[in-house]
Length: 167
Image 1: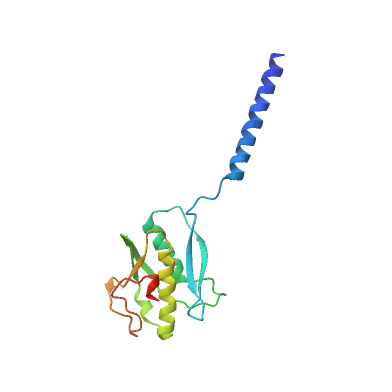
Image 2: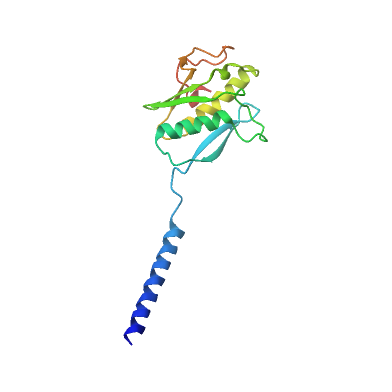
């Protein structure tokens, strides 16, 4: 008789644990911050398209900003028509100072065959991607560690931080 009661208690406890697990699992939402929104500019130069990119384990603002910048510079999958950064452009470093992300791009960004139209689309996507991160509202661009007034074409002023309202 005692063993039947003990077995009944074990079965009831196991069922309660299993049901509790299922209820918690059903009502829990994915943790905020599992992805970051990255933007690209369609070939019309105006339309910004967001896409979610999964984050790795790092969640500090600087790591998230670096990852978002890297994804924005890499652009969407190759089968998607979009304005893209020049081939070989890489994100060398990203620092977050207050509400400004300071991004250092490689010199390949200076080789732009698309003129002001392409520059605008590239940097608009980069700024939108970084300012989608909570706490970042501006982006200061550097090239190979140097603060530059413009890219060689002179179409886009880079001596001051860029914001979404820059466009």
